[in-house]
Image 1 (cartoon, one colour):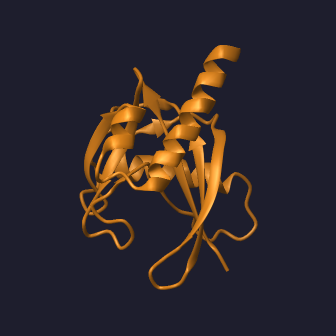
Image 2: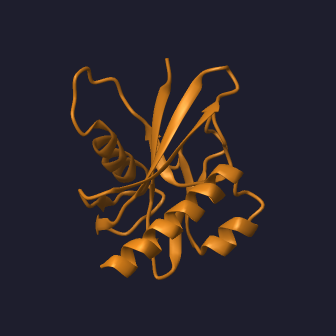
Length: 146
């Protein structure tokens, strides 16, 4: 059985919203990441991925995101304890609020970084770099077609 995780990529002024994960986090503590989290068990449910992402953005960085989200990519990985995770990334937009490190148990700080800055940062894992690269391409396509 997989754990399902969702993450959201938000851009503003050519920079991406990235968090530095608390060193207390079980997975990837101290590394840079997109905002996101694990999907809770709800039984039969529609819109569970989007609802989870909205909840995670509010809990971690205190913002509301818009209903419309665009799929970016999915990956899988294995946690240190052997559990398998499916991670799904969406391109999102802020609806209300200004991001801040609302939950210090999960988020040490908020950063706005260009894709190049993320790519060169020593605390940016390969999966974050891949997510930003794909989100950047989708964002550019969306801007061109609008």
